[in-house]
Amino acid sequence: MVIMALDHVRDFMHTKAISQDPTNLLTTNTLLFFTRWVTHLCAPTFVFLSGISVYLSFRRSNNIGEIRKYLITRGIWLMVLEFTVINFALWFDIHFRLELMEVISAIGMGFIVVSLLLRLPSRIIGAIGLVIIFSHDSLQAINVSANPAVKFLISVLFRPSLTQLTPDFAFFTAYPVVPWLGIMLAGYGFGELFELPAEKRKRIFLRTGIFVIFLFIAIRYINIYGDPSKWNIQKSSWYTFLSFINVSKYPPSLLFTLLFLGIMLLILFLSEKIKNGLSEVLSVYGRVPLFYFIIHLYLIHSLMLVMLYIQGFGTDEMLFGAFKNGRPETGGGVGLALVYAIWISIVALLYPVCKWYGNYKTIHPEKKLLRYI
Image (tube, rainbow, N blue to C red; front, side, top):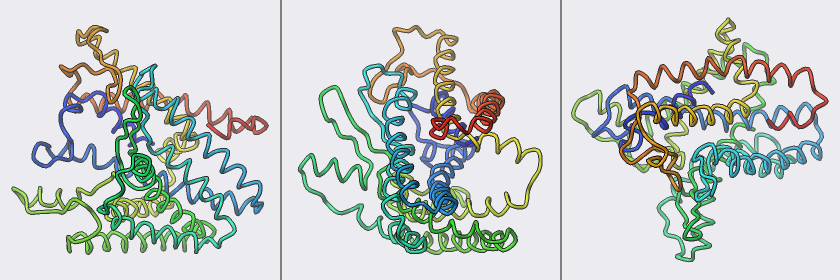
């Protein structure tokens, strides 16, 4: 949750956010590259842990009807939030000229699918997830029908794509359902490990994390399958290394998934071992992830507008609409050092708010609606 905010501050406020891809090795630098690259850890971790959460909730309740109803309701609720509250936070466009399908709706749709699979053994569900993770890259190059309805369906299920539904309304699929569903189903199957004794669980996290990263290295080195962007020799050995780890998130390729889930597993191993003041602070954000997600987007976007006013831009220069969040054509923005300072300030500012809301949820279990935010 904390790392995610860095990416959003960079995306809204960095001087080069509009004109430069931070992972383009022809134009980027090391700090800018890793400022973006490290945040790739967030989405697959959210989705994988969501699968684990579903498994643990089901085991606690052991009531398929109850859990299925909750997952379907929550899944629909997440999609409604994505296309209303969250999309408005991204664009501040009261006309909603663009709907962006991102991680929240991908999780919501995943919950609905998982709810229909609950009668299957968890290992079967996990195996289905692994099949999707390892095979969906092979579908990306297949030509599809020119029929607009079919293309739109393929976009929602498999491929990021922009669909212009009317002259004034577009739908952009950034997180197609199936690739992210594979990660959630794998997480559900992985949930069994959380019923093991802590020491045994930690050993499995460590060994599996190392194995997955070595698997990434082997497949990436072969450079044939697993990612649409091949690595290649660059101007220096360091940039060649950056090319090697520069994998595709849209949709999450096999290599993207292996690399960042491998890192996540090592972090899970470390988090089991580390219990200190910092871990307690971080857990405050983790207890109210959706609340934090929504609030931090509105705060960052609002601060971007304040930044523009301070930099002398007028309201008439701010552009809103499809892929326009208020940044004027002439840019504006701050350097990377200030991006980091603003990021840390926002995270610190949200700490007491998240702590209050987490405590409020704990002492008011009778308020069922709080389960959904």
